[in-house]
Length: 602
Image (cartoon, rainbow, N blue to C red):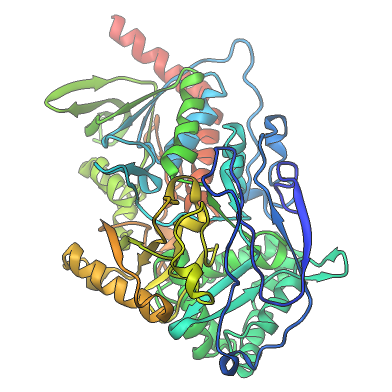
């Protein structure tokens, strides 16, 4: 069963062939889509389809729950998390006389929000400072002047996002996650759609890990028979096998592979280049915005061991609508309801600190913040930099770089990424029915309702948000809203928005020739010069712990040391680890705060 079964009432039903017509899911918020009309997963000519074997397949669809069982928050993920490091224990409730600290957090992404939630529940006073007009960091979204939701990226929630699910359960927004069919869908040029299908039932019995994964890889038409055999050899000699019986040992083996690229590791274990080209590169781009020759084997195998050992880890969910409304606003409400404060448009310009006789920083004494010509000095007992890599580099005083702990952060660099949204006057991924392709009224959407990968486009992952996230992105009388993530984005960063949209539109039509006569009616481009940190071989040792050498200064962010990859889950986990470090240090932090007050009083 899924780690969210206590929240999700399942409706089960059968289909007669491999090609499934998935049901649209409804969120708690009233959706404009009354009836599902998603097209089959793959529509190809008989010649292209001849090599596939039709078989009776069982699947199930989920209706999004209408309530969130907050009393079961602590059980989210506990029975499914393979490693304690991936789901830390919550600290015990504070005692009646426990010190209450004032905490200043710079950054309002998931790392900062996660840290804030944990500390507020320990009774501490928390202020979050964000330089932009909105919260969320790389998960943020906003509306343009015409009311269109603009996203910073394509946000997909894997079934192993245990810490993020826990945070969402606390804030009552698990109901805004829409479960997709348990397949990974590859869209090749000329409308050739193929699956990595994890759905495995024998009669009424659901077959789980590792057998569902073995079957998925043995039967996927995305790879040739020879490539599937080579693939099996490589993965069969990987730390994943050890993880099945010894998860901790398997993770130690995975960590030890940080200094080699996934491509080099994979091919040295018998894997084929064609497997990389047709399957693993699109997945690597989706996970870390790098291809297999540039991404660490540690990064890729961290994910694969979860997929192999936990049945629902590879299942995909997407928000019912925009991140601002369906994820971030409820978390912000949870924070403010517990006394936390969020201050937008206040940017930190300077970290003020005390030094010892040798000139080493001992503790932070304040933050200099500015907002539209205003300036203030913020004083707190504890300071947290909950930022991405470029933000951390800007915030950390240059003098601190003489300490290797801080200088290592400057070895990390971000990957450029561009998110492109294209609206059409019909349904781009509906390839079977010409009439349905142009039917944009009657409250129905048509096409592929899932995350999509491609080895034949510069956007390796994409989705039609009008289908996957209909509450905010379906518009009556309009068609698909394709959201495409350009990775690597380096060749596109210097291009104009119009040039980028024209090229992405061209590649969309190459993948779905049936959409050749549709019109693109609206577009948006968001460029991020440095997004996820570049998880290249040999970079893991440069990632810092959440606890720093400066007594009352802590770090949070998915680039910091944690056993997941740079992602929404990694950011949330880092926030929990940061809060736990602060809670463990409360006695000495309280003493430091008391000493400062005595000095100030004198």
